[in-house]
Image (cartoon, rainbow, N blue to C red):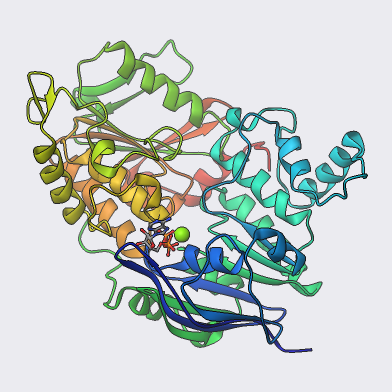
Length: 480
Ligand SMILES: Nc1ncnc2c1ncn2[C@@H]1O[C@H](COP(=O)(O)OP(=O)(O)OP(=O)(O)O)[C@@H](O)[C@H]1O
Ligand SMILES: [Mg+2]
């Protein structure tokens, strides 16, 4: 058997005036876990979409088991034994979680699927992966994490021999990630080959055998994970050294009583808390323990205009809540600000001003490409996140609700977003940071609150941060 399952040979794909893949060449060894890393917009998802028959290359070749293949459709890809978990979920939102997995079955025209039996089968598979799935809820009602699990199960039940995973862990909790990785190892032991796209270099070092670094659509290098480290990978990705922590952090006061609260949910409510001006308050917790309710409570304050504070919001689900995917970036930029005199003159939008201001923000936040007219959905995942951050921060809000602010962004951009949040805090903004990433919370917060079972069960000030204690509170009887 050919030891190479997939080979990219000089694959090129151009969108408009940007080269998403530029003579991309690399090989994936059979029975390995192969990481693809690179900056936001480097061309990772495009390469995998070409392999999976969703995008057609302009030139170049793809060899499967040593044979050139023309993969024009996902049907062909699946017939070749490929399966893909997409960065942006492809789910029928009106249908239940169960139906979405059923839809992914390959059935002949005369075959009838037994729904009850299938549900038992899927549940067994889900348990094996430690995933909780509310089978009968419609996808529209599921949290991002739950959608991610449905998306993964859809592909797992297909028993693909080459599994492509595009940022599968971006919204999984640390516990779920551990369970998921154990199962990936198991799949590999059974003969499966896995391609993992991730921005978390720790994950690459933990479970991958080989890694290909992509920069500006081109494979910079493919190397054994055993022969590299986080710094070297980061440097290859961005073409310069990454300074992991650029300065002494000062995430604000940890003595709330002395300050004016900028946002407060009163004590009689289940999720009572307050954030002071110039303070970053972190919220830790396993997903599903009240994060959604907390975000809703805050958005209700915003809607009710009970407080006149200017609020910036990074929503958890950027494609469903934070944006109009088919509209251009500049249209997305003035969502909610269309009557701002800077952009509006007697009811007429001043598009030149909107465009100018959008371009400035895109440049400042290093969003690529700097194309204000391009539809939001045509930006790479991480760049979409940067657009939202840029839009929300450029108006200097007094309070920022940051839910998973660095989801899917590359290592350089994580540093950048962290710096920007701290800069906002320094000029006096109050920030509520909801994150599944404990490292992020420990780095940025003045105080951390732990959510469990829809209540805050622990509060620690920065000087008393203790990972063990936080972990224990997060897991106290949690659904893991
Ligand atoms: N359908 C499309 N139309 C126009 N441009 C596109 C389209 N899809 C991707 N691009 C562009 O191709 C480039 C590569 O995008 P791709 O999604 O492959 O990046 P990526 O490496 O997966 O990034 P990320 O880490 O942010 O997910 C980006 O500049 C993106 O804007
Ligand atoms: Mg991508």
